[in-house]
Length: 367
Ligand code: SF4
Image (cartoon, rainbow, N blue to C red):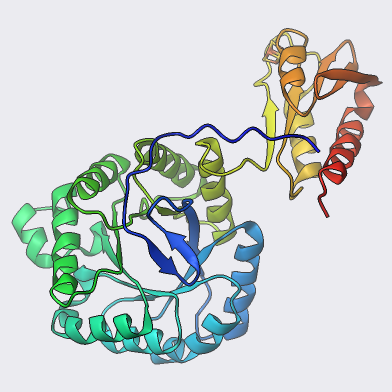
C-alpha cells in the first residue's frame, strides 16, 4: 500500500475534560468529532432513522434530534436504540422531555439556558437523573435565544453575554456536583462567535462544541464555518463541531469533515489537488477536475490526485501526489507515485485516472 505520513498537527489542543457521548469521546484530546442534526420530524421514526443512516454513511459521528413534542419524546427510545451513532436529544422549554430523553437512553441531552426558565428549578433533579444514567449535558447558548436577563444587561448578544449565560448555567449544575457538561455559544457572526469561544476557553475546561448558528445557505455557511472553526481549531479550541447550513444535513457532515481534513485534524480521504487553470492551460481543467472528483467520490482510501492544466506546475504537483495528470498538447502524462506510467490522449485522461485510482485503492486494501 501507499504509506501515509501522519497529518501535521495544526496546534496543541487545549486540554479539556473528557466526556463519553454514547461511546464517542469528546474533549481531553480525543479526535474532534463531526455532528449534524436531523431535519425530519423526530416522531416519524422511520424517516428519522433513514436520515441518521445517511448521515452515518457520510461520516457523521454524533447526531442530534429535535424534541418539541410528546410524540417526539416517545420516539426517542427506538431511535436511540437503532441508530448506529450516538443520539443527542435537543430540548427547549420543556424539562419533562429531558427526563424522557435520559430514560430513553439518549447519549446526551442539549438544553438551552435562554429557553429554560422553568429549568432552573429543576436543575437538581436533572443533575441527579443525568448523573445516575451517565448522560452528559450540553449547555447550548444561542444568540437568537439569549437569556432575557443577560440581554437586558448587555443590550445585545455579545460574546461576553453568551459566555456569562453558559457559565452561569454550568454553575447551577456544579452546585449539584454535576460536571459532565459541554458548552456551545453560537452566534451567526463568526467574529463574535470566535471571541465568545476564546473567552469561554480561558474560563473553563469543559469540552466545547463549535458552531456558527444560522450560518446561511450552503456557500455562505460553508465559508463562515470554515473561517470560524479554522481560527479556533488552529488555536487548539474546539472538541466537536457542527456546521449549520440551510441545506440537507449530509452537506453539513461533508463540510465539517473537509474542514477537519484541511486542518490536519482528520486523516485526509480523497483529496483532489487541481490547479485553478489560467491562460496557459491546455485542457479544460474544471471539467477534468469535476469528472475525476465525481468518478472517485466515496473511495474509502486516503488518496491525493493531482489534476494540472499544463507543464508549469503540473509535473511537480503530479509527482507529489499518489496519482496525477499533467496535461499538454492534447495529451496527459499520468503519474503514479512520481513516475510517469503512461501518456494518454486527452479523451482518456479521466478513465485512466479512475482506473489507476481504483487499482491503487485495491492495493491499499479497500473493499
Ligand atoms: Fe495555469 Fe498550468 Fe498553473 Fe494550471 S498548472 S494554473 S494551467 S500554469
